[in-house]
Image 1 (cartoon, helix red, strand yellow):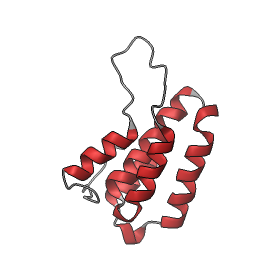
Image 2 (cartoon, rainbow, N blue to C red; image 1 turned 45 degrees about the vertical axis):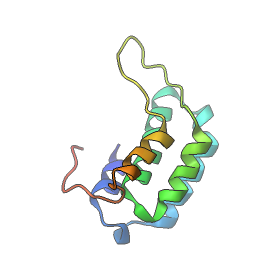
Image 3 (cartoon, one colour; image 1 turned 60 degrees about the vertical axis):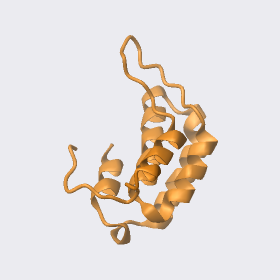
Length: 106
């Protein structure tokens, strides 16, 4: 959650792009073996990269394509896990990729 807030509020030039790419590769490799809540957060991280880090849009879309539909047991709630690729594509279609927020809720 906190890393997504950093991506959302800091300028791209302030971010360690190489580290973010490394983390996305790690997500793709480890998401299937990760615990429930971690899978949910990993999926959200890929969406955040695609939404907020314009130079990594293509990388995030590639990672999202590899993830496919992430299954998370959310129990008896109405919560849903967004499918990363269509979510990123929707943001791109709206022309909002790279648009930063002024503050975060974290």
